[in-house]
Length: 331
Image (cartoon, rainbow, N blue to C red):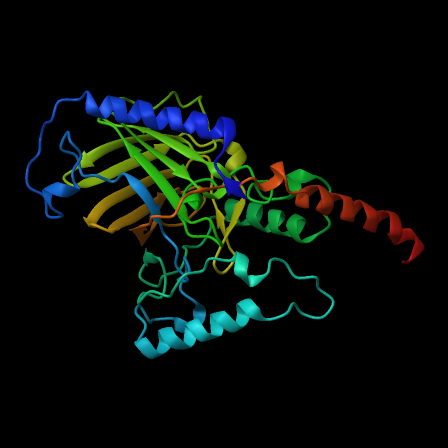
């Protein structure tokens, strides 16, 4: 990884400059009172979400089975989980395994009071998959655990294409930062992990044609009071596979019929509440929601180069072919 440099820095810098120039040329309007304070508003009166934010946390998307029925942790439980997590991070790999990253690469954060990011349903667990989605997920898992025949047997995350949505907005292993730029007509979010950039038009303009499908779908935003509401549809069928994410290496199923509803609410100088709802009856038996606080940070975004300079995927496939060649000889 390296800081944004060269042509990419110039491209994003141009986008930021355009956003700022648009903002400065827009008349000031609607600067009413705000529970978060007028100083947290843009010059044109919208809640100010701009800046760099992080959602680092050790709290998992799902509630651990061992904490069934427990919505909040005591201070003692949080301390015990933090100690156990630290031991797990520094533990050597099991015998016969090479292991992966050293623990200093991981940015796990701290456990919150809540036992899961999911708060709907109340059990903190993902709803059951539909029969079709479960069959598809089981097939992908079987191919993922076996020696991969091609790159198609790897997840989109493994292939460094995207974590999709809502995956791109859920804490993972590292690179938890988000750069937000606002204008009166757009909100732009640059995601540090796998370098996704979301360009979200504001207002009542309709979504793209249903024939247009994209990795991150087609987003439209609007203000409901002091909350930015973003609705996203038009996902590509290629996103119909499981996406891995941390901190407990959960795999999340998504589909082309996903309707994602997100809410961004500025709470105070350094905190923004982020909440999303997943509606996809072709994948999940019920809709579900999760939320996580985002905190302002002075850190810079890193370029997530991934397979542009990382030969991991190539080596995985090469290793599988080597195993196939060695198998007839019994080695």
